[in-house]
Image (cartoon, rainbow, N blue to C red; front, side, top):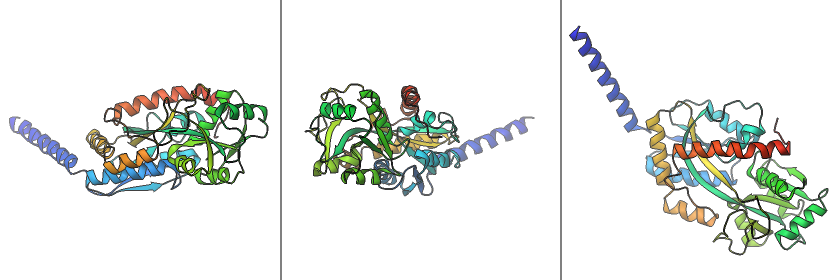
Length: 325
């Protein structure tokens, strides 16, 4: 009996040693981060900077794969169904929370199908209009929109996109439904705003800052408590007299459910390193955002954020009655 117990103990020791060795060698090959939107958009820009920083830290290439469609849920589904080995991840914005209500038949369970790696950044939003819009202040824009609700158009990149959520919150804040014009991506929506085919758009600074600085669009407000250093002349929504519009489009990094805890921990620590990379910090600043702190780039912080945001947006979406299915 003693020999059997000793043999079992030795086997257990070997097994634990193997597991430890496996954790120490991760990653042994390249890692893919799925962006559930088209290339060139705001989330894609953020992800490529994060991937570059994580590649340096992990010693393996971290590549970005764009899997657009269905407001981000197709890419999320792909990762939810991937092998839980730490080699396929998901970087998704606030849509991870809102899709839980927007899509009533999601092919995955938002709070149960993923492991949480950490928060990445929270990008401010900007309220814009075509260059020749007559209104010069946010209050004037709101007044004009209310008086011409049946013809003022609000562009967005599709249901579930950041611009769609921001536009929906804008209409809720002014208490007036406007003409919503969905596009298949941020690029074509912005193109039509630049060309004057649509009137208003509300989108992330990562996508709008260069256009504001170039003067090709008219900027009315940022959705932050204070003005942004990169856009010092653009007032906040509160300064413009619009309450209830202070929010940002946060981004989080996820892994498939069942990914080993030590792998998730390694990824979280690598994310924290990447978010302190000098190039990333500088580029984020140019785009009007800042990296998440070490305290926020953790599984616990991301989980808490996702849960609270699902609760926040559920009544807004239900009140609007706009669903994706």
